[in-house]
Image 1 (cartoon, rainbow, N blue to C red):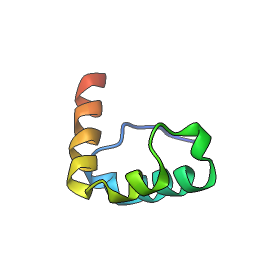
Image 2 (cartoon, one colour):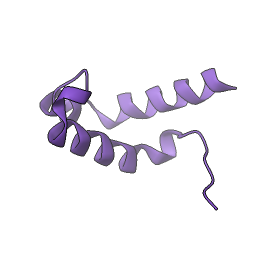
Image 3 (tube, rainbow, N blue to C red):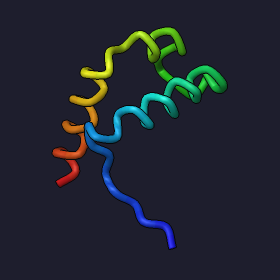
Image 4 (cartoon, rainbow, N blue to C red):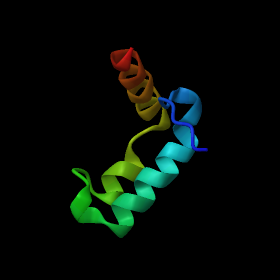
Length: 57
């Protein structure tokens, strides 16, 4: 059985790895380039994940 849940700042490492890999392999599917995704700070990404989770509640 697969469970789903909202990502939080605790998930930022794996989320960044998936996002940058996706932006590298499939750039046409992303708004930002691989370079832009990789350059964004982990802190900014963590805050974004927490804001998204809060908006889902």
